[in-house]
Length: 503
Image (cartoon, rainbow, N blue to C red):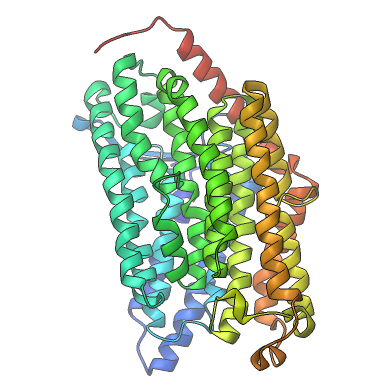
């Protein structure tokens, strides 16, 4: 229980599972079951989102301490327990997860017509895993939720995806699972050294330098795939292309943030010397990612694949910001993860809108869409501008802070990272021009209908957040400012301790 005696985080984490359990007992004709499943899943996710707003309004932004903490012993003889809590970093990712889930359910309202109940169950289970991962203060619990995310996402892609869905689902599963097995070895090593898997307790552990290097590589194998960093990014374009629209939204919006969150939660504070030692390598991989994947994005003829490669480039900015190890870089990386979750999710929804009408993602199949869908064109333009970091939109503050932080460490790193913003503007505006402003050459485009009320409702919160984060970023940075300060202080204090060279 937390200090208030109310297990809010447990309720947030497991209420979606309750909704999934209710769906299992729905009976009747297929159409009735599908309708009831949609409404049950939507109301469950909206209730969870409403509860998550309590975190937003009740959170104390002046402290870096964990809040809403719940702790119970599970296997005390092994140092294992049930431990939940949020700080200024994780609370925002919990909110991001609870916001995007009902949006994804709304986006799937008409596009998913087969096995609707099972589809909604998968999304509710996925929500539980995402919230549990961000709220876990026990490393074993974190690992269970971290890996548990794979199961519903594997099913969402493998069952409701495109023509090559099975290939994409297995590629996603194998890439991420293999990397995470090394992380499990690192967790077991930490448990052996400290006798506990409690994250706050493990942060007090002084790990020998040589051991830090091996453990950093073990964590890196898992987190780098999840980000994803170059060259272990190849699973992402396939997963995005084959996933249903809502699957792409949650994949880009939340699941790509798991790796960055892992670096922030474990690698930087727990392995300070290894983090400093590997930082130049991370810079090199991040710069390669932002430039190479931007160039690859320019050559794409599939809208989803282009946006998928742009996500790799944006997450390269995130990893760069994390490892510059100053306040501006870390703050920018966190803000960029949050804004990318909103903007990239909205861009995939934009693709889904026209795909539901034309049943094609090929850029060449479109042209002149703005003439028949003017409202859609305005929204798409807004999210495109946010993606290329136009000031006043959500994409600008995070990238600007990362560039400022990188400049303090190495101006050349900042230069190459800034060059990626120019490339991003090139491929995103190229996409927009070809889809929206070319002449109408296909008869099917002439008869497209603009956004429906349901689609309006789906986009509305994303529009508000895109402008809110761009015009008033301090309302978000204030949440994690104290946590970033404490993280850097802990990192610098650990570096100042006498070095332990061996075991």
